[in-house]
Image (cartoon, rainbow, N blue to C red; front, side, top):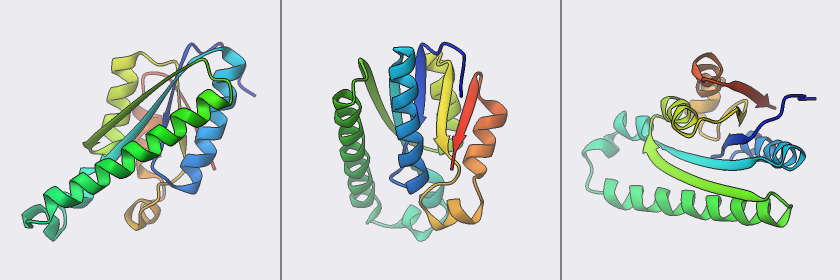
Length: 148
């Protein structure tokens, strides 16, 4: 069990099972500490840059669809956190390299704790066995809790 007093908690979500478990842990930790809960969804631009999407006319529509999925997920998580009794909830989304952007968010927002799942939802993320999580653990300016 975490014993430190965390004022600001950042949780990374992507629609995966591990991210959902991380979100549950983040809500519980935020309630126990009366913390601000910041929820971030980073659309992985790396996957798009390394595929034919980078040169496709379909890219703008794909990005719009991904942004809508991210916004829907964030709104759902925000409502759930408020319903569960988290006092203050903020949401962020971006299109970037998730591992770098999560660390940047943690720095910019001066969070005390990052909570994230062990692996993401995509096949590439699963094949890399948590490379995003590993990067965040090693580069975040604060404690990182990894949830399986």
